[in-house]
Length: 426
Image 1: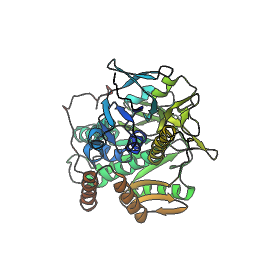
Image 2: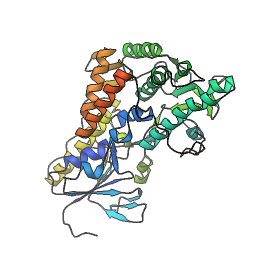
Image 3: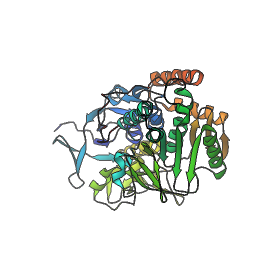
Image 4: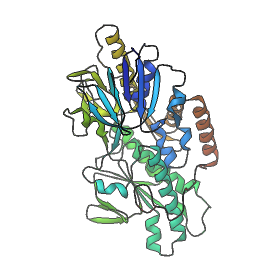
């Protein structure tokens, strides 16, 4: 317990929503406790670069305590919220401690969704955290090593077959980068295999990849993927996945490496509120992002279900940042005795990179593809990285990769017989 008379704001999640809310409250006479299961803020849009050995983990992450070291009204707490009592205004932590709050923001993000097939997760890992990225990197690099040591042609081919399930930005980025690694990065490094013979397939159940983009850019992305050597399959969902491969329709496809980028579900933390959620587990909120019936509780980011002009606000980083900053504005208005403003999302457009000198951009009706879009994508992502050091390091690494085709982070950790964290054999 504390005798501090200032209103206590508890923020759960140090991602874009939680961190932007915390920083926006810097000038307020409040006491903030920021709780996260991990000690760092992650720039998730570049997570695939860690998974594909283009960047190291510290290049896209920074310790929360370091980011907030100068903000004196914040205490960072490493822990997991396991209980919530909205009537008593308390949250319970996994270590047995509990905190009371005057205002609560839940911004705990999203997790993988396998559409009722959670058993696929061991053989088709998704990409949401640094742990996921490092496990995927290990799996990708070991696939080439297994192929190099394999004498059986069929088995070797299965190790050199890669599938990415899901044609959104993450899936497109993973597939395009995988093709680049096979055709350029690993060139002349093996003696028994030719990595350029690796097959990379992108599978999308819908009619086209990048469905959130205009159809013209979606088609350009498909053509750019084809140019990189990626086979794009649309209109057919996978029927099953195991450690030997996957099925498309009635056909089993041997592939020892399958990656999941097909769907997300909101953090299970929303269930603690005891309110009705949508099919993806998101919490419907009022216009000021508070929970109906609980004006002191707010939800932001991927956990919030927000409708605007008849359309859902997308689960992207800019939306989470804007929601977090808006919650801080609402709390400030409440403290000042003023009406709480309604949230209004500003859509700055969509960007997706496909590979070297290939990207698509849709910003306020301006549609770009190819090299110009790629440079635009690079600039935007460097600008929004947390910390000057990270921006410089990422720029240097990308410049080196551009001229040399090399990826400096191609390190496999752990003994060769070590199982991945999910229990599957790498």
